[in-house]
Length: 438
Image (cartoon, rainbow, N blue to C red; front, top):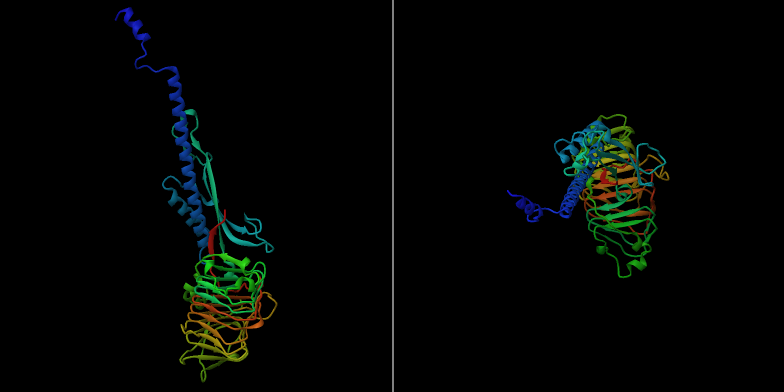
């Protein structure tokens, strides 16, 4: 090649890259590489958050079972996280990253210490880590050529176990709650109906009372309902939750019979003694405090004759009738009868001790059927869990601590005051619900 050819080649711009275009190529590769690596980092963070969420919910669900140890719940949380994150994630969530504690409703914070003076729910915090200390950073691709080998990512989730307010103290039904006129609902008292709530007029809802259902437009009231029911509009809430305890009544009864979960402290003898009715009746004097009994149900129904039952767990499989002005204090009465009136009383049945919401003294009726009470029923830390309908007519000043959960509907009373204890309901039979908080 001659010198002229070489000069021509050097001057030629055909197929050559300019300095400017080379600069743009480098910038494009750098921005593209950064975009790829940043997107990958955000994608991994989302995966880690999902893993922490599922692990926290799984851990608190298992920990709420009295038969499951904290370590077993922790192990399951770690396994869930690794399952969501895939291979090579064994150091992302470790034993020390699963911490059990409490969620403080007042401060909205997770804490590990407990105080009786604080509004706390059992909770668990799960933290997912990809850090240099653990040598598991999220790797980069193109930006590593600029000396950035990986992203450090840390995320966490807090899940809590809680019981909806209506299940602690209030009326909850899978069907309709039908209440009449002239009732007063104290602050904190809660109504929940999966179908709808039906009210007449002249009811009073104090500030803080709750009337909830999945579709509040289904509220059944007269045309003047809002003007004739003081505070009703302000109390309305949209809510939906499954009444889990209804589907598990048999399991609860089995646990009580086995003497495991749900058994109250006042039972000192776990032997189940059989009582055989005489002329269709069992006397309250036949029940000794601290013991468990099974009523032999050869008759179509059995009447509990007498004034007071105290400190007993009782099982039956037929309709049970209480005598006039009967009272239950520190009693769980479980009935597998599916009769619409598996528990009934002519008048004056009292569930719980009239003790101004003090600890203890409550009573629980648990049935696969329904409950029917004619008049002047009283609740003082009283609970009814029924797979069927519940109907009751209460004494005007006889409700101070009531929790009714019905798999059907609740047909209620008129001219009563539904007081709200906020305490003294500690022996209620309930199942936890679970949600993410942070």
